[in-house]
Amino acid sequence: MLSRVYSCAVIGLDGVIVEVEVDTGDGLPSMVIVGLPDTAVQESRERVQSAIKNAGLYFPRKRITVNLAPASVRKEGPAYDLPIALGVLIAAGVLPPQAVEGAFVIGELSLDGRVRHARGVLPMAASARASGFKRIFVPQEDAAEAALIPDLEVIPVNSLAALYAHLNGDLLIPPRPPIKPEDVPVIVGTDFREIKGQEHVKRALEVAAAGGHNCLMIGPPGAGKTLLARALPGVLPRLTIDESLDVTRIYSVADALPPDTPLIQNRPFRAPHHTISHAGLVGGGNWPHPGEISLAHRGVLFLDELPEFGPRVLEVMRQPLEDKIVTISRAQGSLTFPANFMLIAAMNPCPCGYFGDSLKPCTCSAGTVTKYQKRISGPLMDRIDIHIEVPRVEYEKLSDRRTGEPSEAVRQRVESARERQRKRFLVQTDNIRLPENTRLENAPTDAPTCNSDMRPAEVRKFCQLDDTGQSLMKTAMNQLQLSARAYHRILKLARTIADLAGSENIGPAHLAEALQYRPRVLQV
Image: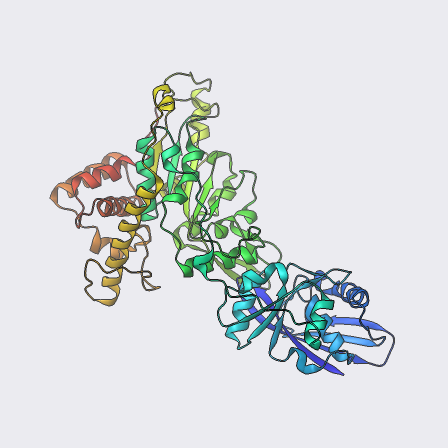
């Protein structure tokens, strides 16, 4: 007897419908799985057989052939255990074929019949809904994740025996109520008000947040670089619903969703250790999975002790920093992952960390300091818009009981600047004029979303300088020996500073502030 159960494979960040066909026939008792399965899928034979028997159900003593179609798509992971088990039970006549008609099944089985967590449930559920399925059976701990997809009946399953009783009509499992994104709480992290001193660094991070610019902080150990970086997501604009689902899909595929968090509402903050490999940073593997730069999508990638990262690791970031995506090629094909993140890096000025410090003398030789600072290539430094020095905090500021400006106030200014940018880009795209009080949630997909995304055409149109600004920029180009990329980045940064000030035009003061964020040559 032949049975069919529908499941899903995850390729990159998208789901592909998989038809699980199970056929029983005469011959020695065995189970064969075909359809380009990996080792984890091949091992389903033992898990499915033990789970069915330990659930008190009948396992046929026949030759069983399982086909995962389409055969051209590689199948990986144990999420096919539950659909294979249901296919075997239907083929054996234990369950009627109509029991899973129009349904979608995902889940890993333990030997005693319990249903375990599966990776990538959110893109699988989205693919099921897009393909016309109305009902989905998922592991109980993944039900909240699947319930984010509207118009889909989600049945949480904790064991094969419970699912059998549900399909037979003996003991129905109530569906998981849909989850509204606004019901998921937003977690507040480090607040700017708790950080003593460093007002000029907070200002630089506010500018970086307002325009989506990359930033490098240089200073001695203990000055607060890491604390400042961890506070940055709190001043970034709140994620929209589409952005939250976009980020959650990446974390679901990477199996990195925090416990009891079906939807990520906070801007991601990723801080990989400097021993990370380039595959761990940009993604990779025999069949590529998202790396740290994709897990930081729509959020912040923080690289502490930047010169300690391997040169190859740093250089592979150059293309994602420009294109906002990363493409990983293998013999089987290529996969593209999103990588629209803000790079926030921190470093000491020298190996001992105290070069240029006002109190503690540096113990490094001049050659050692120069060699340490040259570990970061010029092309990568050119892609960082803001370079800011973080000095040690004085005792008077540390002991002051007063708190600074809260992150919420800074975030409101950042959101106003971002809204001004979105309106500007939307007007350019659609050739329409909008009233000043109109609020836009999303700009067109082909338009930049913030100033750092501007292309040369937008820079030429929106970053015009007056005569004083032209003179100042010409002098800076000659004295700082700026590249063409640095020239455009300074204009983008000045446009962001003007947006924070509510100015329609870039003034000399805005350009001067943007120029002060360029890297300074340290005298060794």
